Length: 239
Image (cartoon, rainbow, N blue to C red; front, side, top):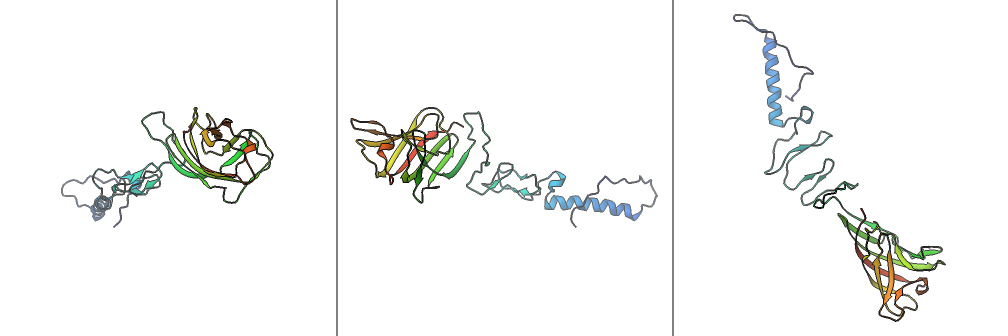
């Protein structure tokens, strides 16, 4: 029989010697003992302060979540109070539980973002070729961020000024960080190699050219309506 507990403890009348006990009293005791035995065999239920678990692997702790579901101590399983991860995985919550301890890893996530371009901070009339949206990816662990992406214009628009790849998923911590421009094409008038850096305290990658007399910031003048570039970068997130 399944364990079934009364809402309050039973009260039994003290019997003296030679007094005949009512059969129901004996049955009540037997029912209580049977219920306890059933719980020990099947695992003490969460509602009674147990875990519901009946077995436990070595070096693992049985745990029950708030919903009353028992989590057994299977090797490799992790539990953060909400999420049960399969062996070989560590689950982090969707919202970072930030730690001030330098030795505590408090975040990991992967995702996509849409990179864009701005000229002098403006984006008037800029449009992008099909496939650019969501084509960039990132991985973040702790405060470290790696990005890799692609941006291709279908119109450069009418804004002018310094060129910046926009849309990085996290703001940079403070100092300029490393970025790399891979394959690129359909630029106009470049006199040096295209190089880049993640801007300090920002969410963009500024473009420059090197190895030429006109080395320096790349502006809208170097872009055409069909310019494209692949990029990657590594930086420290502000949070």
